Image 1 (cartoon, rainbow, N blue to C red):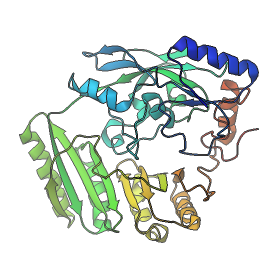
Image 2: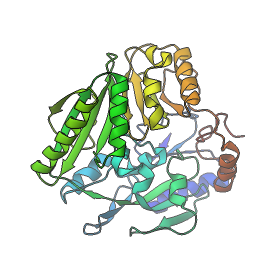
Image 3: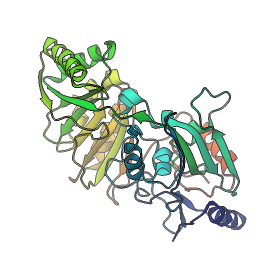
Length: 383
């Protein structure tokens, strides 16, 4: 059963009633990605903020905007484009519409993190509602340093387990008028040396992604931008020279907008998110566990060590487990966002900070009403 209040007062009234009755419930934006992560109880009501989708304030000159959490990302990007601005946040891998609140709650950064940092770094203010219906605000509407504990970072990546996000103030970027795209191919060891040299250089591409389209062949995809075509060409030439020095082939491709990954969206049975130190990525790409996942597609941010893998093929759970074990050995981790219903593999494992996460959960949600069984970094549901 889904509830979609048309005002903050209606939402507050519903939450307070559920708190009084100790009813467990699920915060939601557009509701297109509730199946990601650990499974939720289908009998628990869903509270959607899809109708809370207003733009509250757009400070064009200050490059900030305040919106209600139910506003869809694609609608926001279209609105910002009219003012020659954009929000540097990656769209969900499956291409399904997602609300701003849902994106922040999941906190999944992609290739844009290479230059623009992660999702949490775009937030300068947040409004939330606790499970008892009490509202709170953190941050503000101007870009400045924050003293004390940063509540915004706590809610980013909380997966709706601590509170419902109702409002966000975000920092924006101007749209660059010109882009250039370079595809680099060659031996993985050479690509890794190229990547390491790039990280130590003064070049700052918008994206530097390791990609594989299910054929076992890896490539680096680099996107640059500037205010004129000559500056773009200069950057591409420097990248080409660096690629040549490391024995790699390269080709220019049609320039694209920064939030376009160049990877076709498709319906998949499996979708996993991996994170590890960037210097260890090349070891992962050449390990036996990765080789066993033939036919999978991969899009990994070479500079930040995070990314996604997905497949429509039948994949034994043991192979996903083997990849998770290899990632743990390399100092990283793996989350299963989407899997076949009968797979039964844990979406994520217990994190070292599990006791702290549980303590924070109890402070925010003492009745354990929100998203029962889905607390990041905690494998077993909390009692």
